[in-house]
Length: 528
Image (tube, rainbow, N blue to C red; front, side, top):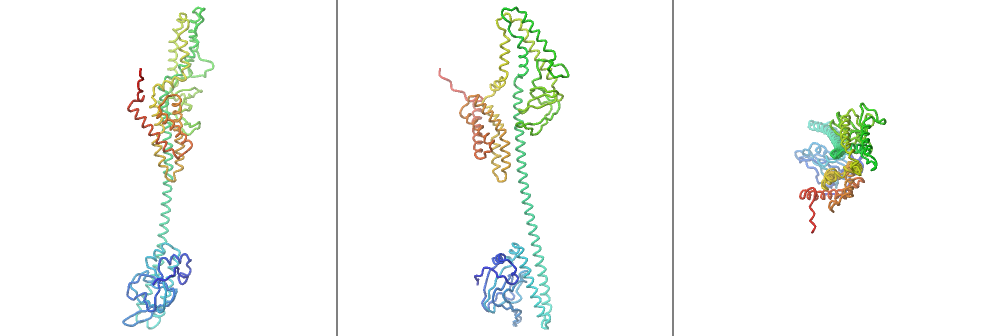
C-alpha cells in the first residue's frame, strides 16, 4: 500500500545526491509498504522495476524442486531488481518481507526519463547501481564459487558474473551515449536558433535596402517628370536676354525730334556681336545676345553626384542623350539643374557648342525680326514694340507656372501627388512592420517616406493657396499635409487610418474624373 513519505532519504547509492535531485527522483517513482510474509518479487515472473528498501528486513529466496534457499538478506538502503532493469527478464528468485517494511519503486521507463532530464544526478545514480551490482557479484562469488557447494552449478554463477560485468559496461556506455546525444541536440538547437536570428536580421536589412531603392526610384521619377514638364514649356532665358538687349532699340524718340535717331539705334544692335571684355575666353567667339544655351544634351556617359537636402548622398551615371536645363557657365563646366540641385557637367561631355550656336542663331533671328519695326516709329505717338517687350520681361518669371496650371486639371495634379507617395504601398509596409523585431526597419521606412511626402505636401499647400477646390478635394489635400507631418515626426499611431482616408478620397475623386472627365462634374446652369 502507498505511504506518506514524499522524498527519498540520503542513504545508499543516493547519499551524495542533492536534496532537489532526490526530490525530483522521488517524483518519478512511488512509495509502498509490505507486511511480513508479503512478496514484492515473485520467482519466474516478469520483472522490470527497481526497488530501494527504506525500512524493515526482506529475504531473497529461491525455490528449486521443493527446496527453499535463502540467498541474501536485504536491509534498508539496498537496491533490488537492478539486473532486470537493464536486461528485462523473469525473476530468478523471490523477495519476501520478514518484518513490516517500506520501499520505493520505479519503472524502467521512468528511470530513463529521469536520467535524460538530469544527467548529473543520473550519472551518480548509475554509479551507485554499479557499486551495488559489484558487491553482490563479489558476495555470490565468495558464497558459491569458493564454497564446495557452489561446484554443483559453477556455470550458473559464472554466467551471472559475466552478465553483471556486461551490465556495468552497458550502463556506462548507455549513459555516455545519452550524454553525447543530448549535447549534440543542444548544439544543433543553438545553431538553428542562431541561423534563424541571422536570417531575421538579413531580412530586416534587405527590407531597409529595398525601401531605400524604392525611395531613390521615386525621387528619380519625380525629377524626370519635373524635367520633362520644364522641357515642354517655352524656354524663357533666351527670350529674356533678347528682350533686355533689344529694349534700347525700341524706345520711342521724343515727338519733336526727326526720325534719324530711330534709324541709328537699330544700327547699334550690331555692336553686341563683338566679344564682350568681361566674358570668359572660349574656343570661338560667342554671341552676346545670350550667355549660354537654354539646355544641353549629354554626348557621353557622365557620373554626377546626387544631393539630398544640400548633402551629397551618392552618385549616378547619366546615359548619353539626357537633356538638362542650363543655369550658368563656370570655366570649362556647364551648370545645370537636376533634382532641384545645381550640378557641374564638363562642356566636352555635352553638345554645348552646338546648343549655343543654335540658341544664338535663334536670338539673332528674333532680333532681326524686331529691327524693321524701327522706321515705323515716327508714324505713331508711341512705338508698339515697347509694350510688347515690357510685357514679356515682366511675365517671364511666372509664365511657365501659369501655362502649366492652365493645362493640368485639379484631378491630374492630385493624381501626380498620389503616384509620388503611393499610400497603399506605404500602408502595406507599415502593417508588415507590426511584427516584433522590426522597429529599426520601421523607423528607417518612416524617414525615407518623409522626403516624398514632404514634396507632395508642398504641392498640396500651393494648390490650396492658389486654386479653388471642393470640400472633398480640400479634405484630401489637408490629409496629405497632415500625413507628411506624421511621417516627418515618426508618429506611428494613427498614420494607417490617414493613409486609408487618402486612398478612399483619391478613389472618389478618380471615380468622378472617370465619369465626368478631368475637369470634374459640370456646374448647374444659372437661371437667366
